[in-house]
Image 1 (tube, rainbow, N blue to C red):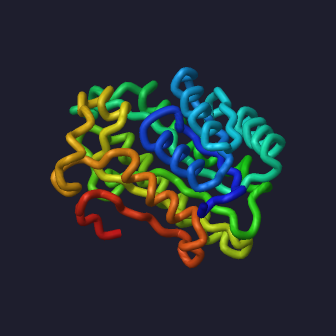
Image 2: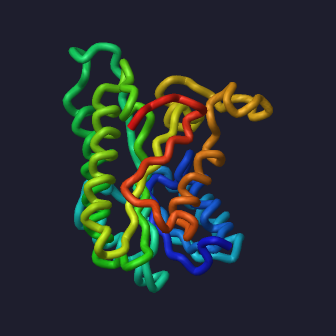
Length: 247
């Protein structure tokens, strides 16, 4: 029970990596507040599974690009659980385009709003409640280091998340708050299936011969949230199946 009696607020936990993190953290003893954008059915199922482990859980529908929603979500979490110990900024979106000339402005702005601006707004709202020993964990991507020919704006936001993580870690260090990130490589999630038609691969294959699944990635977040990572801040973990990223 590495997270016994810890309170966690996580975005995008209605499916994919966020769902896997929420369930793993609940198994480790944490109470979980889930922010979701539109999939109420998915968020409700995750909440019910968390409660089945004997933990508390709430779901909060809204847009992290709305600063007032961010503030109310944090206040609701603290009101329900009595504290906020761990913030996980995981929500994101992507709109692939093979040619920069075909990038739609509305999609570019939505990608930045969802992936980095909303992350900063929610972290700002949460920060007054975090204390020594608290942790912030952000989801970036291998694309921040490698780039991606069809995800120009998405890759740019993921690079911004790396810089935001490192900078906030410096600012938070005197307060004893750790700030880190996880940069998954290829992962079979509902978002990648919707975007590229990539279905979950046969998990019986050796790990390095297939894309990761969400449950495998979730353990990197657990490590960063636990006492085992007490000396780690401003860093990025790379559960990417062996991609060399250098940085």
